[in-house]
Structure formats: structure tokens, C-alpha cells
Length: 191
Image (cartoon, rainbow, N blue to C red; front, side, top):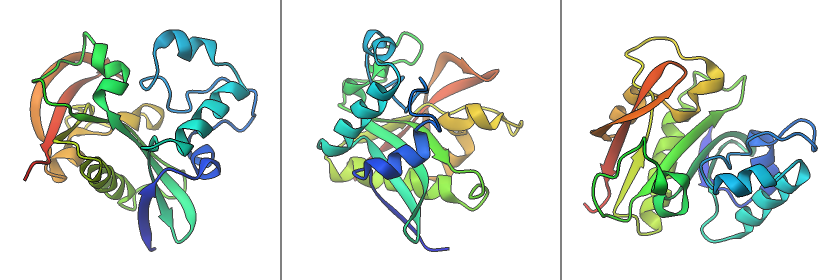
């Protein structure tokens, strides 16, 4: 397995990872935290994909993709926190006034899990944020204490994987996902 992590500029590859099987479906497309809730509710069916296609053409693109050879196998959403709903969150605190970036979704395709792709995606997202001038990057993973996490709710990642990547616990949150508390983890990129 040869893994490469690249900016998410290829819309068809993003669709493979986060798009619906049916073009008219109203699935997340990893927009829930990226855009205001009003817009999120207004975008229906194909309009969701069209919005993501625009993001893929923008600078910076909406995240990173992991490829096994040329097959898209993983996705990580990463953007300046100020451009996400985390900027206004009452459940996820602000640690300070640094213009941090947020990493909030990691998705690995079935059949490719348990091969270290989430680690490659975290590293790729960190490099992407650093390359775009981020002074620090935050994530809001589940603090599951080793308990099993339902695969559909594991998109936030787990604390242990972020600790392995050098992130440190920066704050507790009042956010709970899949019955597990979420914590704010941060990695300083100014070194």
C-alpha cells in the first residue's frame, strides 16, 4: 500500500468519500460544520454537491484526500476555524485568539480501515494547515477511553490518535457525540 495525502481539489474523489450514492440525497457532504446552519438547511440534493465542487476549486480547498496509489481512500476536513461553525460554538471553547485551523472530520472508506489511514490523514491535514500559514491546528475528537465507537460517529476521530500525532489536550468541551465527550486537542505549528 502506497499512501499519498493531497489537497482535496478533485471533486469526483471528494464525492467518492463523502457524497451520497444517490445524487438527490441530502447527506452531510461534510458541510455541517463548514457552513452556517441556515445555508446547510437550504442546500438540498444536488445543490450540496455543487457547493462542494465550488469548494474544491477554491483556495484553499476544503481538506485533504488520502490515496492508495491513485484510488481515493480517505478524507479529512480542515479549514480556518473562523470559516466554520466552531467559530460560534458554545460547546467547543476558544482557547485563545490565535487564528487556528480546525480538523473535524476523518473518513476512511470501508475496506481500507485499520491500515493507518487516519494517522496519514491527520498528518496530511497538519501539513496542509501549516503550508497555509496556520499557527496551530485544533481537533475535537471523542474521548472514548478505549471504548468502541460506532463507525458512523467516528468521523470526529479519537483522542488517542491525535495524541499520537503530537496534539495535546487544550480544553474540555460540553459537546458529546455517540455517548462520548469530545475534547479540544491542539498542535502548535509555530515551531
